[in-house]
Image (cartoon, rainbow, N blue to C red):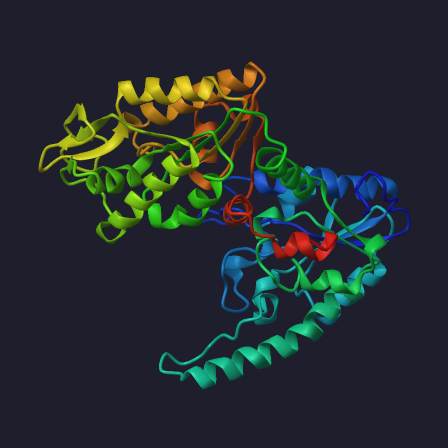
Length: 420
C-alpha cells in the first residue's frame, strides 16, 4: 500500500478528504484551528512534490446549502497556514467546481464548498415529514443512496489520486470518506499523515502493547462506554473507571450516592462488568473518596467524603485526594496508557483537580518511557487546558472514530483504503 512518503504527487491532482469541522463564533471566526493545522503537513507534501490538491470537508450538520456552514469562512485561515492562496468553489459537484479542479496547476489548491450541503454525502434523505411512514423513509433513503453513486463519481473524477486524512469521520461510510475510494486502484489511494498517525497510535496501544497496560475511562454514563469497557477487559491489566459513571457502580454495590448522577437502569450491568473484570483478572480501580457539592456549580459549597457515603442533597463532582493518589500510582507504574474521559466536572475549576492529577501522572509516566494516548473531546480539552498536550505520546483528533477503534471495530474509511 502506498504511503505519503512513498508516493510522488508530481503532476497529479489529489482529492484530499480532511476534517475542517472547526468551531466558529457568531462572527464566523475560527475559535480553534487544531483540525486545520493537523492536515497541513499532508497538503504541503502534495504541493511540494509538484502536485495540486482538491480539498473536501464538511462543516457542521447542515440540512442543505447554508451560509452559516459555508467553508468560505475558513478559506483565509487555510490559505494562511498552507502558505499559498487557496481557490474556492461555491459548490462541490457543480460546473464551477469541475472547471476549477480541471484548471488546477501544480502547486495550486482548491477548497470545495461543504460536502454535506448534499444529502448524498451521508446517504440519508432529508426533508421528510414528521409523520412519514417507514415505507416512505426507506424509499427516500434508497433514492438518496442511488443518487449518491453519481455524486461520488463526480468527486472522484476531479483527481488522479485519493487521500483520506480525516480521522474524525473515518467511522462514517460517507461518499467522500469511504465510497470514493472504490474509484481508485490500490496504488492511487492512501492515508494522509494525520490518519496514518492516528491508526498507528491506536494500534500501538491495542495491538503492540507494552505492559502493564492501564486504561482510564471517565465520562458521565456507563451506557455510552459499554462496548469499549468490554473490549478493554480482554486487553488491559488495569482499568480505572471514573467520572459520573462511578456513582452507578457505587449504587449497584449498595452505597449511598446522594444526588449524584446515576443510571438506575444500568445497575445490573455495572455488577456484571465488575464480575467480568474479576473473571478476567483485570485490576478494576475505582474512586474511594469524592469531592462533593451541594449544587452543580463551581461556586457550590464543597466537602470530601467516602464515595459510598454521600449525604442526601449532595453530589459527587470530582475524585477526592485518596482516589487521586490511588489512580496516579497505578498510572505511574504503567507502560501503556489510554485516557478517555475526565474524572470530574473539569469545566468547573474547583472540580478539575482530579483530572489534573490524572494528567500529571500520565505526563510523568510518559517521561519515564510509557506510551500514552489521550482521546475524546473532553480528555483532549483537559490536556490542552493543563498545558500537557506536548508532554503525552499522542493526542487523538477523533471522537467517535477513536472510540470505535478501541471497541475493536473496523472503520469504513480505513477499510476502504487498506481493505481490512
